[in-house]
Length: 255
Image (cartoon, rainbow, N blue to C red; front, side):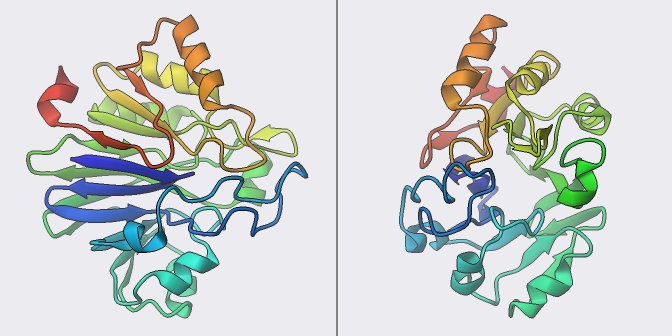
């Protein structure tokens, strides 16, 4: 499989013969409001053109409707016939944007040889969760491919740890920028990401959702330094730059 980090949470996967786009955030640099009064968002440009990003895409996954996961540019540029999986409750708004093949991922679904299973997430802990709203992660499986657990916009809390322990994924994708809202952590930070590394057996951890938004508190360098301090190798924790393509296989991941 190939996993390309586009920017922020946006991933393009070539997986089991299919091309999947996750959480398309396609806005130009500085075209959207600030979250933390530090900078307009996104803080960086896309690494490749939108046409290149969309080339070959057969399926779209939208974890939730925050603007940095499914923005107005994505709504305009994505072909309206593309199948979309989303969390239950978001399908009406996505259909209202003109998309004609929208399926809420209630539990588990199969599509063209892929198996998708919705996983719980918590966009922070305590009162901030009500402000942030519901989110989902998912696991993805395909014949001959490494299993993926894409945690989504969540902090590390018991249901996330349970998925890792119970499913033993080959690859875990975390959102690791330490974003905060009114001081509350709303996605994983460096220490939580390192804990995932330490408790995930042979899984390779891929840290994303970094250096694109102004309410982030953890940079790629911060995360690498925290990992190194805890003895986490650069082969255990991958921290791709925007545009990087990772080539991963089940035998290699399993070690």
